[in-house]
Image 1 (cartoon, rainbow over the protein chains, first blue to last red):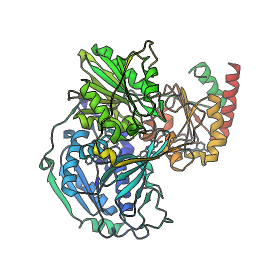
Image 2: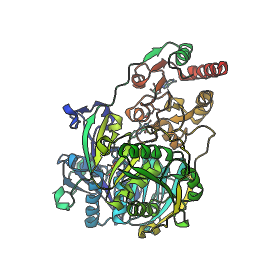
Image 3: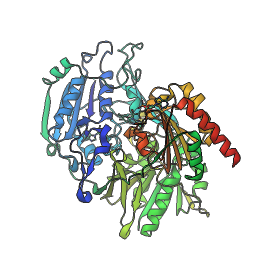
Image 4: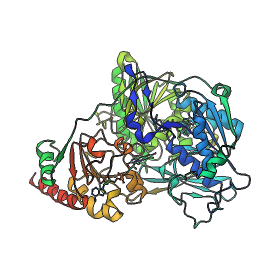
Length: 278
Length: 329
Ligand SMILES: Cc1cc2nc3c(=O)[nH]c(=O)nc-3n(C[C@H](O)[C@H](O)[C@H](O)COP(=O)(O)OP(=O)(O)OC[C@H]3O[C@@H](n4cnc5c(N)ncnc54)[C@H](O)[C@@H]3O)c2cc1C
Ligand SMILES: Nc1ncnc2c1ncn2[C@@H]1O[C@H](COP(=O)(O)O)[C@@H](O)[C@H]1O
């Protein structure tokens, strides 16, 4: 089974409160913030690895299985791909582009071209890029490919014959279980990296994965340097044109400074008399 | 003159309150451009929902009810929504950005070759042209954007578009047939595993939300320490990701960038550090209270009232005081 994981490089999401708005609101400036893989895409890589390995011996893919990571971004985004290769992915594809020249629709159309070339059995990707917070590429890609899909996955169970998956979708009020016939698109939610989220019938059912995406140990980081990583211009994919325009950016209004109260009685008194919410 | 199609959300056969936010968007956009709106109800219960949906001032209510679209499956809903949008000559398709809308909106857009404005907080109608404000970077930037295609798809934040109230009257109703695409047969709806229902208000609709974090230490901590405070306020209960991940409470109580976005009159954060992903989901609340034993916790930078205290001592006292205050009226 071949899995394609599209992956975006984002400015350190844990420090998104340090972004700046360029004068005139022309753009968001992320200078000084360390580039990191979009966390949901890291989870997608982790999910793809779990689907294609024996969890008790995660050094090698199962025979015939592979995980390919792909990104549209600046040249430096190849570092982000290397990080995924160090986690265990087999090969990487960088299509060089600047972020301003992309929107969700164009990313999806370009991904459809990559799918045409790579012919994966499954696309596993993040539910949302935490910089743009759009949450749309997976849905658009699935409709364009005419593939069945499941968004916001918190569990994936691969059938024994590897021809279908049962996906648990985290939605309002519970979990929707869908059975998809492969090839398919899956977008993952936070809980896809919990210890028992993935079943592939090779990893023993008793095996518990670590919580979260795996760290790359040093030997894997070294090995990743030798893994294939192809680079090509974005234009080579033959997809262009934007359906949306970003006109202006602003900082959100600042909250006025609050106060510390000394005890519960003061808190209650202020909530009644001052804030009038009690 | 925008002609707008609202897609209603049905859950377990009943109309969901999320729909009312999309209707508010439609009213605002229709008024600002001198346009009009219709509502599409699709799924099990659409016919029953139609009579309620007919009281919001829509030109007409369209009904698609068929076993093929009984339960929500994106691939099965998108062809019908797109086909109604196209044949009806709509300019905008709007859905509330719940799990349903976030999934369906972009699919419909893909079928219509439309651009998407997702999870918007505001619509502007200057000069009859629609533009949208949407938070990005976990709410640390607000972008103004436009959609360049002749038909646009918009998903709206429930917390930012107040629920529409009925305006009376009854809209015309008509039935529409369902459309299919091959991928719809490659997805099978297996089950909806509902999380335990509580008698408390819905997180996204409540006027007070009390949320707990990792510091509550266990499901039992939520039950015995936090819940009395939640109920003293008659509030909805929320949680941080850490508390959900640890299994203290169901995942759909998660407030934040990647969970629910809330903007109640009062938000109380108990034992929550205030990571930016959490702040993204609650910092537009009117009044914020934080209880945390660490005076340096970032949550205090967002709080109007901060109490530095051990929650296991302060919260029971707070719950009692709230009960007393409420009893006094
Ligand atoms: C991709 C991604 C998406 C995310 N999305 C979300 C999201 O949507 N929502 C969300 O909430 N998080 C989200 N997070 C996680 C977020 O970064 C934080 O890890 C999380 O919010 C922390 O939860 P917490 O505050 O409960 O726990 P902690 O950070 O561990 O904080 C616990 C707090 O409790 C205080 N405390 C401890 N004991 C006591 C006591 N006895 N009395 C009083 N105070 C006490 C401590 O001082 C501390 O401040 C996301 C993370 C990632 C990577
Ligand atoms: N520039 C990009 N390169 C590769 N994948 C991307 C890119 N942008 C978005 N994606 C993928 O699409 C998912 C959803 O992104 P979005 O719809 O923009 O929130 C991400 O989690 C990625 O898997």
